[in-house]
Amino acid sequence: MTMDNLHSNLDPQMPIAFIGGGNMAKAIIAGLIQHGHNSKSILVCTPSQATRSNLVEQFDIRVHQDNSAAVGFADVLLLAVKPFVIPQVCEEIAPIIATRPNKKLVISIAAGVKHQTLSKKLDNLQRIICAMPNLPSAIGKGLTGMYAPAHSQQQDIDMADSIMTAIGDTVWVKDEQQMSTIVATAGSSPAYFFLFLEAMEKAAIEQGLPKQAANKAVLQSAMGAISMAIDSQHDLPTLRRHVTSPKGTTEQAILAFQHGELDELVANAMHSAAKRAKELSLG
Ligand SMILES: NC(=O)C1=CN([C@@H]2O[C@H](COP(=O)(O)OP(=O)(O)OC[C@H]3O[C@@H](n4cnc5c(N)ncnc54)[C@H](OP(=O)(O)O)[C@@H]3O)[C@@H](O)[C@H]2O)C=CC1
Ligand SMILES: O=C(O)[C@@H]1CCC=N1
Image (cartoon, rainbow, N blue to C red; front, side, top):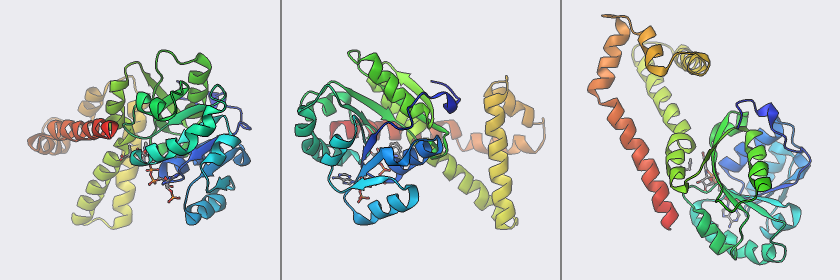
């Protein structure tokens, strides 16, 4: 709940178990370790030997091939598998969780998978929190949208929040429906920015800049703009106007974006992402 993740009160020794060791698990683990979490307090259960070896090499954490090991290792379990794998994982861990349901907190980062679906698949487990982080969690600059149903205990909300604020900032939503907009706005959005930067870099190269210069000009400008947008007391349209001299160069670029109906394009793209999150929640 704070922009300063140094304020997370996560105990660096607290055991955390991940089920699934892919891109997003790695991003969260990188963020946790950067925040000072003890690597030996992190276990990842994931089927492929290659992924496990890579995780040990990269982070010096514990790994296991059997998902049930996660339940024995930690009281906080982070489900980081693709949405379609969730039913199988729940089937494997539900009987073990059922032996001590009051001890286990499950945090799911699977896009679109609803709280109620998870609860049903985990033998009516009540201690479940849905989280939608994003890739910049790896460098402590993530944004995680979070949802806990009304019956959740405050200690579970605080625990989930302290894990996610260790790797960035959090936004809690009261209505689970809003999680699909969080997917579109935060979970998926780093890819939109990468795509836009790729397009700018390509255009700069086509206009004649060497690749290295094009890359530097694009990334440094993006970083400057984002830093200003965060720190400035001006809103986004005002900052845009500060760059756009009447009859100048920027105005021509902005007109070209407007002719291309940028607002509609962005709205359509985000609608498609949110719609897909809703479809995943049905599957
Ligand atoms: N990527 C992103 O930016 C974001 C992703 N998410 C969500 O995170 C989840 C994971 O996505 P992402 O990390 O990108 O996906 P990846 O494909 O990179 O990782 C999925 C991982 O799940 C593992 N896995 C597959 N089957 C099982 C199983 N039966 N038991 C345990 N582990 C299994 C895979 O194992 P192995 O490698 O061993 O074969 C792999 O390590 C998804 O639900 C996605 O919606 C949420 C926010 C952002
Ligand atoms: O593309 C996906 O489905 C996942 C969820 C949000 C980001 N990556």
